[in-house]
Length: 332
Ligand code: KG4
Ligand code: ZN
Image 1: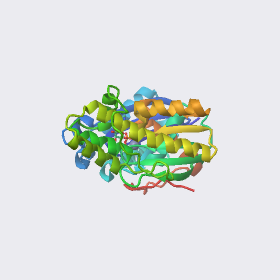
Image 2: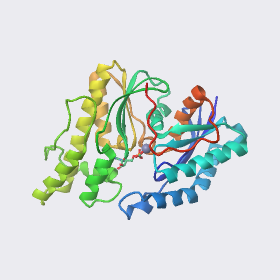
Image 3: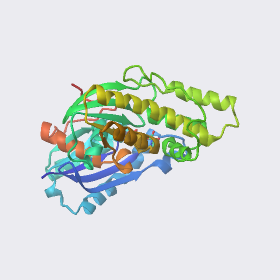
Image 4: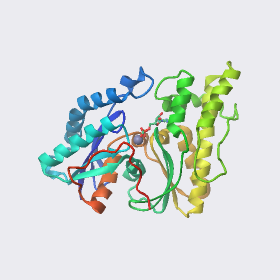
């Protein structure tokens, strides 16, 4: 048994969580800054750092109280060390290292992307390997083959915009607000996904993705058809994104002989994507690993899950460890 306290401050959520043995979530506290950034139409790094400073101590305290544990019961303190906004990352990393020092516990650095890859394992402890995971967030879009704990092969990634970024940019253009993903998701439910045939870039071409052309084509369509119903634009755009993501992920699962298709990252909260992944898995006899929505968007429970495996394989790190805003996923 091991108890990990994890801290996540890579972007605009201040989060702390206590997880037992990588799967049993004793607490998961997330303080979102969405309301603070919404008026600027996106995350303002300096504002995010200040909000993390204000919220982190109460968020950690709440995570410990809800878990009902004392610091001396912890196995280690983990924190996201990258990728993300450097000022925001440093606040979580400094806090985690200070607590590790004061409580005399090991410090475990965690890659945020590895956290998203482990989110599903919080609810599916016996994650089958190899597994293909579609990691779709605001900053990343990757197709990853995981052959064992910490053993990743990057099959493909976006060549331009991340999937979440495309949702956010299209929503911004349509004047819908920030963040765009959940808003488009809600609107798409009332629209016709077949109303407009948006392009599916690189659909049959390897495992890389490209979403910037799709975004431009939404803008052009709306300019030429000012009366197009927003709900139809939203539904058709979402359909094009989901179509490309799931087609490629499905092909990868078969090519690499995986038994399961997993999703993670903020865009994995999307209703259209979740539904399509489930359909494909039922059709192809695959296990669908779909984390609950709150575990798709940024949270610290997924950092604790990944931290638990990192602790077992690498042990603790030196307190000299810094943060790296462009940290890559360690692949084999
Ligand atoms: O993983 P995440 O919380 O933060 C990053 O690591 O980037 O992902 C945030 C992204 C944003 O772009 C947001 O618009 C998108 O995930 N997102 C969604 C949904 N919920 C969040 N996109 C589509 N549908 C959703 N329901
Ligand atoms: Zn994330």
